[in-house]
Structure formats: structure tokens, C-alpha cells
Length: 407
Image (cartoon, rainbow, N blue to C red; front, side, top):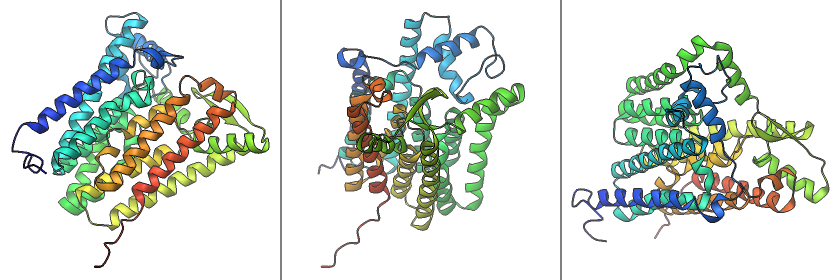
């Protein structure tokens, strides 16, 4: 290994890696506008445009029109709507905004890897994984706002690793206000700060995250309490989504043993209805809670090292994606800037599993999504394979490290 790979200060190579990865990411996003990637698109930006246009016309979200997303997501809807663009122009402006979020996520990954003392090779591998991931996942990354909370989450992690823990918790708090999933990384980060910086600092960080989230959410809660509450209820009472692990298992039973299933459209998605899906959804929720608690306990029991914080952060997010009763394709975007940061052989295997999950997702979404809704066999089995790969990802991230062999 060269001296450059051992020292971050020896040359400007790390900065060049970041610039090169950002360029590669932008090229990957551009390629998504051609060929296979543009077939049978399913665009959430149609709804985003409606939200943004209403806000530009002076209407208040949650009070004057319903919104299913948290208040922290609203800037990503309204900014591309400034000037009241057409639908095609809105899509272009929204994609530019998401590209900026993606570049920001890359910068945060670079910052985190620098704090971890990663070699140039490890840094290049992690950044290139994120940069090329859009080509493996497909067009969904262009038409969902999930790069925004994902960038905030990895920025928060990077700041904590760089001993800027209050800034890090503030970023995570903003991420929670944009989409609730960053909340699952807070327990591990809280314990890490407690053990490295002290109990008082840990609670200050937690209060900081809560305060930032409150600054975004409370004004809307005060002006439109019923609308905000309805949005929360809608998201927390969703039925078993057809793309979740529980649904994939029921679809397998349907094809193998003729289990009768009923699909209904509600809560902005396609879901399975009936007693069996309801029971499976309850089991999924219980499994999710148990897995998260186990991960947080495991994170607290071991040494408070930066590499372990990265690993358990990735494990928390992976468990949330794999075991929740809702698993939309865009949820995999949450994992893109975090899983490649995991070190060693574990990180290589985890990144490989994530890449396989991305590819399996693109095989059926969006081009065969409505075949899945009709319970066709091929997309059902591909979906099950994808969901089991995500379970394997959780196993890899949480498996105990091997004890060194005695000589």
C-alpha cells in the first residue's frame, strides 16, 4: 500500500476522489433518463407538484389541503414549484434538487470516512458504490424525495464521528422531521456520545435533536393540529403493504398452496387485506420492535468505537427497512450512504447484499409492479428473494465478530 493510502494529509487525492465520485453520480442520474430506465414510470412527483403548487398559491399544508408526509419534507416539494412550472419542468427542477442532496450525501460519506481514518481504497469503494447505485436501483431515485432525509442522516453520523456531536444530532433531528426513519439511529448515537463525551453531553445532543425537529413540526401542529394528526395516523396505521416481507411470504403461500389473498388500495399504496395479512402485519411490527431493541442493546454493550457506531447505525436502518410492514422501493435509498461505510469483510458482504437487493428491486419495479399487484408469479418470487436478501443484510450486520484463532 502506498504512503498516500495511509495518510489523509499527504496529498489532495481524497478530495479528488470526492469530486470524481460526485461526477460519476451525476452521470449515473443522467443515464436514468434513457432506455430501460424510463419504461412504465411511477411518479410520486405528480403528487409533490400538487403540494408545491398549492403552497406557492398561499395555501397552508395540513390545514388547506392534506399532506401525507412530515413537515420537513415540504421544502423539497415547494422549491421546484417556485415560478409555477409545468409538470415536465417541475420534474427537472426536482431532480436537480435530489442530485444536490445526493452530492451532499457523498460529501458526508467522505467526511465520515476521513474521521474513521479510512484508506484511499476503502474511501473510493464506498463513494463509488453510492455513485453507481442509481443504475442498479433504477428510476425510483429520481422521483422520490428520500435522498433528502438520507443525506441528513449520513451527515449527522459524520458529524458525530468528527466530534461535532451537537451538529450531528441537529441534522438527524431535521431528518426525523423530514421522514421518521432517522429516529432509529438516535439510540446508538446517544450511547456512543454518552460513553465518549459524557452523560450530560449525550442528553444535550438528544435535546438538540428534539428541538430541531420541534422547530419544524410544532408550527404546523399549532396551525393545523387535526391535519398533522391525520397525517401521523395515516402513516402509523398502514396495513400490510404488498412489497413487505410479510406480504412476500403470503404471496409465496398463495402460489404454493392456493392461499386466497385480497388486494386493496389505501394509504397511498397497494396492500393485502384480510385476517391473515392483518395478523402477519402485527407479527412484522413485533419483529421490528424486538430487532431494533436487540440492536440498540448490542450497540450499548460493546466498546464505544467509531467503527461500531457505523455498523450499528447501518444495522438499525437495515432492520427498519427489512421488517416493517411497509417497504416501498425508495426505502432502499436510506441504506445507500450508510452500509458502504461499514469496515472490513463484513462491510464488503453487506454492500454486496445491498447491491443485490437493489438489482432485484429494479427487476420488478416499476416495470412489473402492476403484475405484482395482480399476484403474478414471477414478480412475486423476485420480491421474496429481495426481501430475504434484506434479512440476510441484517444478519450480516448484527452477527458477532469471529474470535481470533489461537496460533
